[in-house]
Length: 490
Image 1: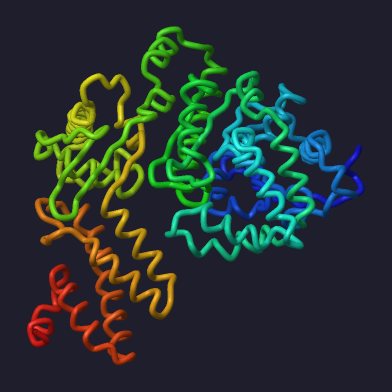
Image 2: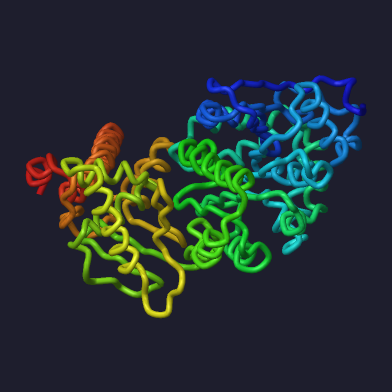
């Protein structure tokens, strides 16, 4: 076999509960199998799990030459590994480039792949729209010996600011891949009709996307899901970027687990015509779940919600609508049991579940404006999330805090000033009283306190007393503890 002369690094973990279901995890381009570190133990609770490094990635040997890096070569690489481990049929969870490889593998061995879950289709899906930009990308990559420097830029886009700790790891992963190989991989996937492979595949496919993924143009994704891939099972995760298995491992593992169990149970028990009809009418994870809708949520300086540009003024003080909306927006999603614990922890469980169903129904109606067919509140049996494009001023402030914290010197001071100058008229958090929301805000407020004191110290250490006094007055409008100091400077 073609790949027996090189070493492929892999790890295999058997499920603690004996099962015949095996998951194969395939990482993306310029990454390696350690990208699955957070989601791997969660999936291993229900499945046997195999992860491996692609050629010239991680601890795997490179191919004999760059020209050997073809789909048949990569397919044979995985096939040899599966045969060696005596894994005849398996599920695949793949990221980016790995998703297209899995599609090619499923086309070559359709009986081997039971289900395929793809996290973030590779950006090459959109290359044909702007070929001149792709040429610029290739020229940029050629300016480097290996993929590390480019990987450093990608690391900032792969994950949200809260995952900055992964930046160094992602750089090291990319650094193992030569620039020539990366260009070859890019050409390989750019010349592959990934979308056609999805449309033509007989394998059940589940696709997960981060709504805030900068590598996925929103217009392109929206067109794909509403035209080329309409009817395919998808999950759009608000306030998440490209690497959902790093940013939201629990949500990712749960969604993949539920999808696989649904498909395998259906295959075992046979299809149910009534269930299929209901799914066709209202698929809770499908593309009719609010694709192009927008939710603008403002919590600072007063609570205000706009849906598709229309203000929703009434109904927010009923059935915890305000609290549920804010909580889901801030956390990206919520488990049903989590909401019950937060809002009805003293109620009997059956009653609490009924209360939650009624509350979600009320919130779903609030988020529907005239003429909308799709739901912007999506709930399955375990989780609740928001569909469409979600913006929230609290998350904007949190993001700005993360960016300012990464700066130094005068740049950091100016960034901190911009945060406070952009805050609305106080009181900042009025009319929102539930602990589940307030505790989140208090965490942000503590960060604002830390940054403001750093900024004051910076100005005072550099002898900029006038600027320090002005900034102190600005901060005193928003945070406790500055009032007396500010009045003394007047």
